[in-house]
Length: 233
Image 1 (cartoon, rainbow, N blue to C red):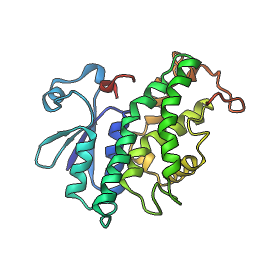
Image 2 (cartoon, rainbow, N blue to C red):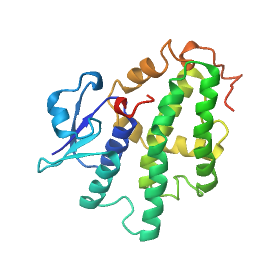
Image 3 (tube, rainbow, N blue to C red):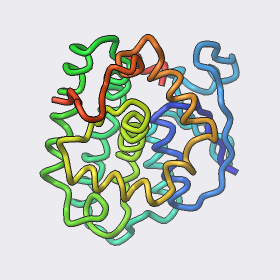
């Protein structure tokens, strides 16, 4: 059976586990503490980062892009009948999501209002592109779940938790993305692809008293919505 080595609130890991769940591929998962990485993990992870996927033949794969490509090579694709051009576009849109995982992590950990606004603006630039590109839905392209949806799920899921617990909505200015977020959450993949205590772990870290979002200064009715380190998530 496949094995995933994970850190509980890592968005890169969730991209992999969400794809496994969507494809209904059995796997087991082992969690580590990134502040105290065991030597066996460092021995199999050249970059010292998660996710790592141990294949059934015992090979350790690293980097989420490579792992996703491997899973699509050996298991049926979510969309087996698309053209090479569309497949390339899907990889590009998926890369845009992964490139912004840490931007979102950083924004969520902002210590003050100004920093939050500056970091949120970086997300907005990507969200504006997505908003213009989303099709008629309910998913990113059409009525079928795709690799692009899976890649963006960690961002959409985390934005929903932040809104629920703080009132701050990263997607407030993007109605198509809000609808897409709602549909993705309805699939159940968000909950299936994270540990049972994910939400509490996430809130404890990103809405702690050291963060602006965790101070309680954000009001749902008066919203100012205009891990900075890859090794930590």
